[in-house]
Length: 397
Ligand SMILES: Cc1cc2nc3c(=O)[nH]c(=O)nc-3n(C[C@H](O)[C@H](O)[C@H](O)COP(=O)(O)OP(=O)(O)OC[C@H]3O[C@@H](n4cnc5c(N)ncnc54)[C@H](O)[C@@H]3O)c2cc1C
Image 1: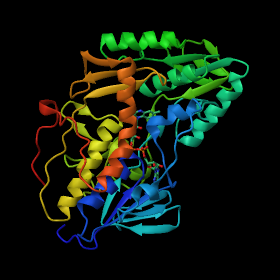
Image 2 (image 1 turned 90 degrees about the vertical axis):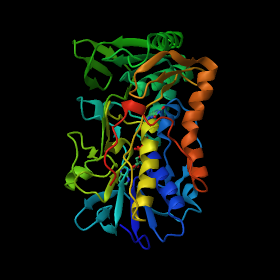
Image 3 (image 1 turned 60 degrees about the horizontal axis):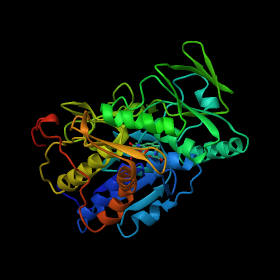
């Protein structure tokens, strides 16, 4: 790639990583003649990091993608990709419109998987977007009038944040968090103990070490045969990704994540770059898990990489290290566990209480701030490149 003029980059997905890739790339390729198109099914930018707040009944500001892109030159196309033809370098939107590309950025994210347990799809709510979270919020408001029971399935960070947010907003509801693992298992002992004290203070009951076998219209059936009656169920256990890449013959892992090389390009189709939750990115310490913490650096790296490639320049491999596990515990409490690059906790480094609330709020608001600033300057979202824990440098491409 040496002739930037007229080069067309299509970014599929207008979530955290697609937006950041498009805006940063526009800034890095200004005056080169590179064209950028961003495709997303909705004109609303969804702050997924705040969906548990919506579920608890909070009104969030609405951010429109065209407004966020204003002044960047990025063209916004509203539509859902329904097929990719990597040989013809073309995507199909909503089954009819086709859009060609020279370079494709695959940023389709992930969603909660309700297909892994019977009944979850039919009887559980999710945090898959403002509508789904809003339906759950409406149900909770109905229940709150008379008291009732709520089951949150999945004790990962999303389940913990949702259970505490709901318990704080609706103290009259009985909230139970059901999890195979102990909530906070990935934290050090002190942060985990703090988390458990907060769950107890908010009255969140725990069912740990158990698997949900089935979601029923009026409760959940556990693998040990017990039934927990509940008036509303929120499913947060497990994620799935779009089948588009696999259907198109782009190399994916067994979950459908796009397999990437050291420069985050598809191992089967190097003109396709993958970022965020939809990309399988391996460091020496293991596969990155879906998070904004790792997703935004993949987007930053990819924007910079494409900007270099269209100018015919070499690129260095992607490197990333984690540095924190931020968890909100309602609006008035939070716990932040700082980590090593490989995500293992550093027990003595943690924040709790009001300082943690401010820290977490900064984390949740920082993507939008980053988008706005990235129109004019190169803002870095990289705190750690992982040091020795991250991938050993691979040959430049
Ligand atoms: C409640 C909750 C709290 C979280 N808290 C944290 C946190 O504190 N810290 C953290 O690091 N991470 C957190 N996460 C995870 C974080 O939200 C994800 O890792 C992040 O959103 C991934 O960004 P992404 O751009 O890859 O995907 P997304 O933000 O999901 O964006 C994907 C985009 O692709 C679009 N899309 C999907 N299909 C198509 C299609 N066929 N055609 C076109 N567009 C399509 C979607 O509409 C969406 O706009 C949280 C997640 C949840 C649900």
